[in-house]
Length: 254
Image (cartoon, rainbow, N blue to C red; front, side):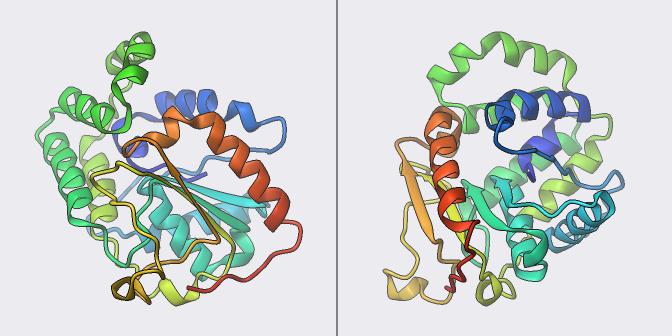
């Protein structure tokens, strides 16, 4: 599992705690390995480099995943993995991830704003803004205690590293990836997501050849973080996808 913005706005301990709470519901069926960005994220780092780091980590750990899941912007690195190292990727699941060659402008503005706040040392504001985008109001109310604890204890040690992670996401260039993603892809999106408008790659001539075409696409009734609101639906669809596609891999080209 490759996290996205979560990797930038939370320290390792807080991120591990969040990922454990989120993914423990699937732990009875899967062994979940979370791979974050490298400790020393350099200026100019790319999602391609993140994918290479993840692939090397899997080799070092002796893991060959059945499924690679990318959360949000983390799915951009997962797409590179699928293109460059399909044997280390398995089937691919992406959650609110841009499937186009470039990150859409509204998503770029979101990442730029977070990076600006982090570079200025305004982590509490960055945390609040990210929560406002990923967590719908009812979910924020239900998680109010958890969010207060994370806001108190979750600040990353190196805010500049965090900003460089976001810069790598916003500068993603997926043009070399599109024709090379041949593993099965399950994509989740929010039908009301203002940063990733609902489209069906392949159905619109302007999109043909400019976006990865999923094997299955699930639109949820919500905005960018709809997959968190409808997590039970996500898990059920993931299990169904795994049963159908990972037993007999099927190449699916854009």
